[in-house]
Structure formats: C-alpha cells, structure tokens
Length: 395
Image (tube, rainbow, N blue to C red; front, side, top):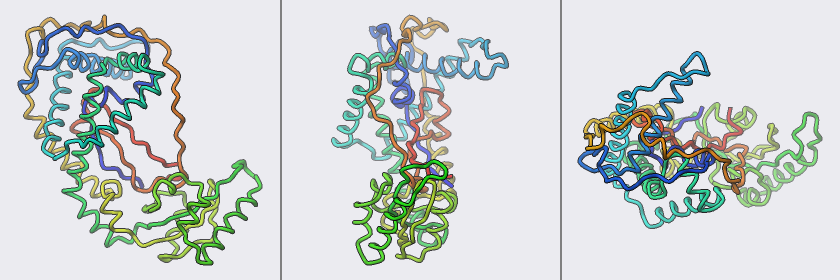
C-alpha cells in the first residue's frame, strides 16, 4: 500500500517542467508588446499577454489531445469550438487563481534560502537543456517565457509550502496519534548487499559471505549505523539514516515478512530478495520522525479525509474568482497566437544523469505532487509535477 497526500501546483512551471522541457524545440518570438488586461482581468488584476497566451495555447493543446484520444478513428479529431475553448481557459484561470488566493492564507512566503533553491533548480534545467539558448527554446516550445517561468517556479514553491503548512496545522497530531496506537507499521534500518549478477542461477556466494560478515559484526555489538555507512548499497537507506517506516504490502514480501517477524531492536540474519541480501534491524516507531514527516507517512484514511477537506476549502476560493473580458477578447479566434507556436526541432542532449531507484525506498512516504481534485482538472494550466518515488521494492 502506498499513500500520498495530494498536492497541487499552479501554472506549475508551464506544464510539468522536466518532462515538458525535455521535449523542447525551436521557436518564433512571441509578440509581448500587448497591454496587460487586453484579453482578461482576474479579480481586477490585468493578465499579461504572455500569461494569457500560455493559458490559451496550453488549454487548446490539452483539449485537442483529449478529443483525438476520444475519437474512435485515431486519424481524425473532433473540431474544437471557440466558445468551448474560451470557457475552459476561463475555468483554468479561476482554478489557478483560486489556488493562489488560498495559498496566500497559509503563511507560505518563501525564505531567501528557498528562493535560492529555485534559482539553483533553474540553473540545473538550463544545463540539462544545453545552455541558455536551448533553455529558451524549450520554454517557447511550451508557450512559456523566461519571466513567466520564473514567476511560476516561485508560485509552485509557495503553493507546495502552503500545502505542507496546512497539513501540519490540521493533521500532524492525528498522524502521530495513529502511529502511537498502530500495530500495522514497522520501522527498520537495513544493510543491503546487492547482487553483482541478477541472472537466474547466478552465483551469489560472495555476496552472502559479505552479508554474513555484516551480520556477525552487528551481533558482536558494532554500531549498526556504522555498518550501514561502511557496507550498505541501498541509496534510499543512505539518504535517510532513519530507515523505513512502512505497512503491509509496501515492500517485497521477503523483506516485509522478516521485518515484521523481528522484535524491536533485534537484527535479522541475511534475508534474500531479488535485490540482494539484507541485514535488517527493527527499531521502535520514531514518533519525532513521524511528526516531522506526517504528510508522507499519513495512512490512507487520513489522506482521504485531508484531501476531501482540502478540495472543499480550495473550491471556496475558486468560487470567488472573477474573470472579466478585456477590449481584445472579442478578437480571439481558434487560430489566435498560432504564429507564435514553434516549429519542432530535436531537443538538446541532456547532460543529466539518470536517477537510480533504491531497493527498499518505497516506504509509505511517497510525496510529490499530484493535483488535488479542485485544481487538477484545470488541464495543462494546472500541471502535475510527478513525484519521484524510489519504489523498486514495492509491489
């Protein structure tokens, strides 16, 4: 079982950041000389040409893709009506600006350190895209400008922080109470000795001997965390020395069975899974750790309750958003802004190294950002940032 407290994001850095930017292409320059508010205002705030253009084109692309997918004939598409498109654009604006208004109530202003982290991430994206020019082309390929990207990066961070603050204030105590009383979760650390050869019938005697060495040292009283540092080959365990807090169905069966079979503070003999040999130490549930990580450790019942409450709360802000048409609104057609859509070209080669999945890294903590129902339906203008779950040991 994996649970995750839902997250949302606004324009969300123009439709999914890494995935979208990885499919970048060449582009024509956009006409950004129009006046703010020429097309719409939201709650009295004039929306810039670049932002409205983003909403218009990304919503259009999403609707066209949906129509194509729904068509019984994959070679044909259902014609998109202007009125249908404009209604969807306005709904997306309402949803995103409603989320922004809600976020403003959650004491989620960014610190200087958090802003620097965003800047560092932008620089990483520039490197992945092969430099400034590739980055610019990538943004243009998803109808975004650098200024808009930077604004939405900060908005996304604010909204994620708002969500965390909201959950901490409303549900952390419930999560701690649950873990105080439950018998259905276990907390373990482990040392993984990975198989050098995973082919069927491969000789694993060397790995077993090494695992036995670790077990013998642990039983002789050597510090288990020191053994993790010296021997462990699970990146997830190395990234968080606290280890894993999980329930039934979260890990491969052999690892789960051995973990629950141990008494607290007991250490297992080497346990074989598809990944290698594990020496597991069961620990008491760490309630301080649970409090600090409540949103990622929350059981499904609390997750469901929290998401329902969050949807209702955010919807009340969405309902208050007012979109008004500007003087150029009536000039819009289905083909508006078409001359600013780039001609696809091959994406710059990314220099980013592929991420590895750790062996036991799918505890019930899986975080990152699938949209809440009240904001996720805003098509591509409320983009989901997919969580990076290290889950190769999960079922």
